[in-house]
Image (cartoon, rainbow, N blue to C red; front, side, top):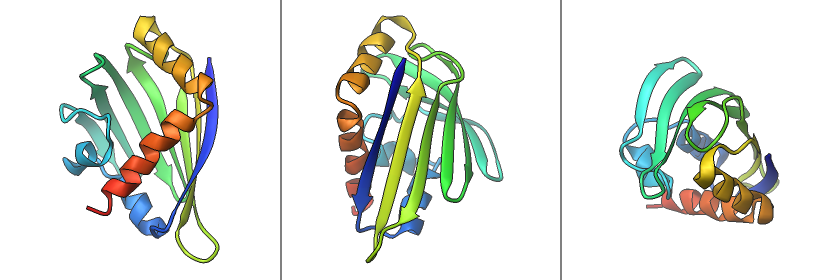
Length: 144
């Protein structure tokens, strides 16, 4: 099981970060460093999206159900070749004192398959530092 949590701060305002986290159009693959452009929105409604996301270079994919209501976004694994169904990402976005945003992220997932065990082991071993770098890279992509 991989349970990690980490915090990322940015000078970007909460509405900018929120819009990026709930963006499920073509821009999503431009924002997230490891997301392949072959991702697909399977269904969508007010405050939720069911999405097939993948990292083609690693051969991993997941169908995630994203649900959001400010200030929390939760992504739950529906099916995947690297994580067991039911695992979650929970992202909570708050304004930072003095301006900007604080993003608290918690992952609670169980690995599946060889690559899934390697990746989740890396997440656990680095205690979220690897994931925090990825999140910071996404936030810096918002500035482009």
